[in-house]
Structure formats: C-alpha cells, structure tokens
Length: 608
Image 1 (cartoon, rainbow, N blue to C red):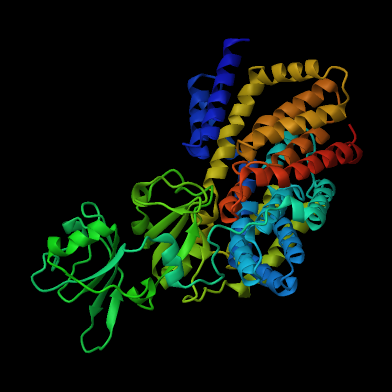
Image 2 (cartoon, rainbow, N blue to C red):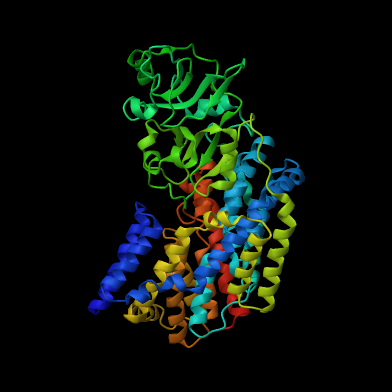
C-alpha cells in the first residue's frame, strides 16, 4: 500500500468515525474532508471544491424547491385530510393509505419533508381514531424510504449514482427505471403490514399519549414541572421599575425567563399582553409571568421588591388569548442539533420562548444549556401568530401539536393547481427526454417562484444546505479514492473473496455491504463512496454497470434496521415510542424483500 493510499484511507476512516459519532454535523465533516484532501495534495484546491459545481448538487437543490412548493400549497395536508376521511377509523386501511401517500409524494419530493409533514397528521389520526401511533408511524416511514426506489428523483443517492454513470460515459438512468423494483418492494411492504402487522408492529402506545388537540394546560403539565410558573406584580419602588431583563440579569443570574407581561392600557378595562424581550423596560403595575425552578422563583420577590400573586388554576389562565404554546420536534437535519438553546439564541431568532423539553419520554431539567438531539420535543411559548408561523418559516423545527385553543393557519391552496401542473410538466419533460433533467428541475423551480407557489425568500430556507454541502464535500473523496488506487484494491479484494461467483452473487454482496454502511452513515455519503466501487467492479468483470449501480442506489434507501440510518426513521422513532427490537422485527423482512427484489429483477430488467 502506497503512502497516498494510506492517506486516502485515513481520511475516509476519519470521516466515517465522525459520521457515526455524531458530535459534528455531517456537512461540517464534509468540509473537513475537502480541507484534508487539499492539504495532503490528494486533490488540487479546485478539485476539492469542484463538487459545488456538480450537476447533481444543482439538481438536488432544484428538487428541494419543487418539493417546498408542493408543501407550501398544502399538498400533504390535503392528502392527510383525505386519509382521515377515507380510512374510517380502520387501522389496516389507515396504515395502507399512509404508506401509499408517503411513497407517492416522496417519489417527487424530499422523503424527510414528507414524513415531517405527515407526522402530525398521523398522530392526529391515531388520537382521533383511538389507534396506537406505533402501529402507523413506522410503516409510514418505511413507505417514505421506499419512495426513493420509485423514481430517479426520489432521493439524493439515486442522483449521485446516476451522475457517476454519466461521468463514466454511460447513459445513466431514466426517470422511471427504478419503478419496477421499487414497485415490487412497495407491494411487499403493503402485504407485510396488511397480513403480518399484528406480529411485526408493537401494540403499545406512546408514553403518556396525548389527545389529538390537547389543551394548553395538558401540554404544560407534560412538559413543565409543577411550581415552575409564577406571576409577580411590579409594585412602585421595585428595582425592576424602569429596568430591563438584561439589566437585572433575570435569566443569566436568577434563572427566571419572562414569558409574558400584562400591562393595563389607558382608557381600557383590559390589560394588554406584551411580547417580552431582553430590552423591555418594566413599569409599575405590570404583571409578569415567569418560568423557572421553584426555588429560584421563591427568591425573586424579596430580591426585586415584587408582589407574588396567587397561582392560577392552569397555564392557559396565565396567558392571554393572544399567547399560547405548541409542541415542536427537532428533525435530524436541523441546525439546532448539537447546540443548546442558549447557543443558538432561540428566543432572538424565533421570537418564541421554550418552556420545556422532553427526551426519551421524560422532561429534561435545566434544558436551556443542554445540547439538543434529533427527535427532542420542545414546548414553545409565544404569540399564536408566531407559533403558527413555525409551519411555514422554520425548517429547523417540525410542529407536532397545536392545542385546542389555536386554529391552524391555512396553506396557500389557491396555488395548489399551479404547483401540481409544474410537477406534472417536469415529470413529463424528464420522462420524454425533451431536456436534461437538471434543466427541467431548474425550470420547475423557477416556475414555482414565478407563480408564487413559494416565495423567493423561502427558497433559501427550503434548501437543505447540509445535504448539498455533504454531497459537494464527499464527491472529491470518491475521486481521490479512485485516483490513488484504493478502489482498485477493494475491487481486487472482493474478486478474490468471491472468486468464481456469478454477478448475481456480487450484486447481493454489494447490496448488503452498502446497506450495512448506510445504516450508520448518511445514505448520500454512502452512495458517493459505493457508486465508484460498483462501476469499477463491473469494469473488472466486463459486465454492464447499471444493475450493480442501481443495486447500490436501492441499498442506500434500505436503512430499515436502525434509527440513525435515515432521517425518516429518526423522526418517527421517539414519536412512536419504538425500541431497537421493534425496528429489527419489522425491518428485517423488508430488508430481505428488498434484497430479493434487486437480485431477481435487476439482472432481468438490465442484463449484465
């Protein structure tokens, strides 16, 4: 092994360790890979950053905009309402419709976005029909996984493998080349849960399952320990009069967060509820609602000369009708993961406060400085308008539950026909080969903005920058592995191990290896690393590379067995109260069915 090969393997190994460890964001790891490749001379600086000019990065970005247009115009919520009406409360029918909806929508937009949109819908259906969420959420997530096997644009790994084939001088895949195999896997998924759902899925409810539309009081009870909410009157002579929360260090020193301020208005019988900020100046007569540890709250009255008011019967009584709460989840790709609320300046950025955090079914004390994890649930507090706006304005949070006191903002459904026509045009143009797929997607993205299906300012929020940087950063590593001969070593090793075996056996082994890696690493990173290996193996065996390449792509969408293998599984894992054994019991049959579909169908559809 040469020194260059050892260096390339060291960079690959280091990246894999960082991916699995999870302390650093995947996009930051990709940037470190780019720096390492340039610093060691395995790539020139231009080659190290060349991934950002790749057509696959542009294509993924455009498809994210198209998916955002579908989301903003209410496609998913419309489908969710239809499911609620048509399922009739029957568990099997509800599960089947959720799987089909997630698979079909996920084939043309981000599967993670589909699950994020359908998760509150599924929880609402489960609560209203008295169904166990665990019986619905995992099949829905698996449907979203299978969506990546239905079309070329269903998931980023498909596009990565397609670009690798085009780079090798092959024609690549057409839009619906994946559909026969994906359709067979989807049929197996539906059959498995229709006939074996009784054994494959757990029957337990989520811990402390909530009603579909709980009250503010119910949400508060689940997230905030009793005694951590108090009201104080700012009396004349109090040291708070004329001061700000920042001046008095209410939060940093005294551990008290002001969540609402009631102030009597001139010539009005009703007090207005003001939105607090660190620079808000208190006045005599203000009634201040504060969240904090019970012992800290007891010390506030003597410290600042305040009058403590009697406790109200519930949290909703402490807030005016203009203020409320909601439960939000931190998705896996959120930039909040790994950072505390204090670090990200949550209140400053979202103009909302966080009243509580639940992790693994338990309330987390002293959560303000606790690093957030994927699937953490937060109880946010603030004006209803801002809470409802989280559905449209934030890709770092998924709104799970709005209480009964709120009415959800309606999506811009008047633009829905435009969004569907744009999607149809993109699919038809791509399928007919009338223009390159990247240009069709770019035209669709521009049309979504031009026809006001999505605002231009929201386009940049819609971008999953972590995914784009991950692809752009890992592409040069694949080039370095090829150039240094590491891929050739891997090919020789596999050939020696499988000496005399036919291409079907090689396809099966490559599928298993790819799926195993993708169960712990990002599926996109796995595709970037494994696609060149598949092509080199095909070249050495002098067989067509398309079956092996598609096998790799489908294996990247086969992360059924671990919660960290795919964001769609991560999203439902905590919400459904699942355990590792649940994924193994339900996911292993699906893994074997997907492997069988590839080994049987791919050589027939795309002969070696």
